[in-house]
Image (cartoon, rainbow, N blue to C red):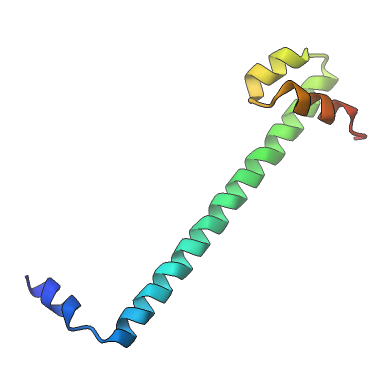
Length: 80
């Protein structure tokens, strides 16, 4: 109950600071998530290109990487 009473007594300025901190933390977390996704995408692209060079068929690559056959064909047609 004591913690609850402390929270109620916070000033509006304190609540604004807490909200700003929460928003900043959330934005940083979103940035980290975006970075991870981008890294995974780049890694998948590089692996796919290597598999294509090894002559692995597009269907198998699609099953293993989760990329669509269309995406793989586009990577195959890119100039490396």
